[in-house]
Image 1 (tube, one colour):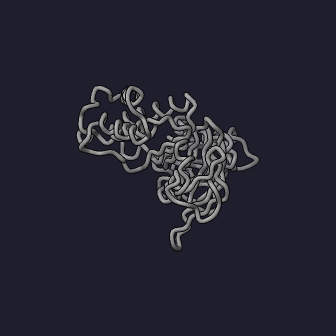
Image 2 (cartoon, rainbow, N blue to C red; image 1 turned 30 degrees about the vertical axis):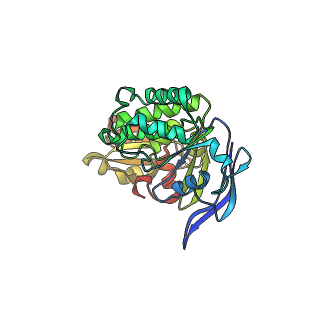
Image 3 (tube, rainbow, N blue to C red; image 1 turned 90 degrees about the vertical axis):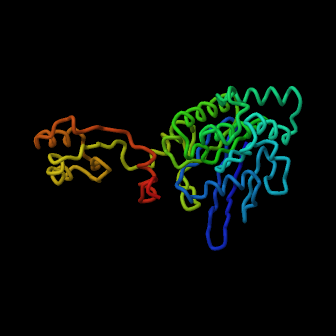
Length: 306
């Protein structure tokens, strides 16, 4: 479906993408996870044919993508970060306009607009001007506008930035239905929870380079540990951290300590030591590593701090 081969893009002295390669099969829900400035939007704009790479190639179903290559664009829809709608038009008027730009007309156009409004849960407000909508409602219409022509590939560039939880869930459910119906989706985000919930495969990108690629389980094998212990941070645990550090590495989180077991030791020895120190079990919680842990391991910094 989508093939990206050794793509590099520079803006002056800044290398926005550095020899990025990946291949997507039809029907995937693929995530690009990385902080702001990682190169996600640049990659999206290249796949959409809005810019040309300095080197490398991008193709959709074997057709080369670029600013002058129009044929592949009929295969894709693009949901940009910025809302691309007309504030003084109603939702229905916006969608009819975009549908006509895609070449739709008559009963087919009306049916697709109505279907999109129902899918976005905004049919009852279809005649209201866009400036009366909340940010989340506008973003739902933004998604509908991008899929009226039923593209095979949908690019979503951080489509939930700044939206309320209700609208975010509505967008998630809408995209999941599209993917279940066979649409291939590329979804960029800096929220690891979104990537974990939505995407079958995820690429972690930072400073224009692809750091890791795979399913969630495959990505987490890059970590040198399989489980973490979250320890409540209070006066009692703080006083015993030095003793517990003999069993592994301890780092501070926002309101807790995170413990990684040293190679060759067992958790049973760690918990026996904690019991001897008088620390009750309610202070401890074993959890599976997350994409946040992986990003920290790969880059030395937290995803949310970048």
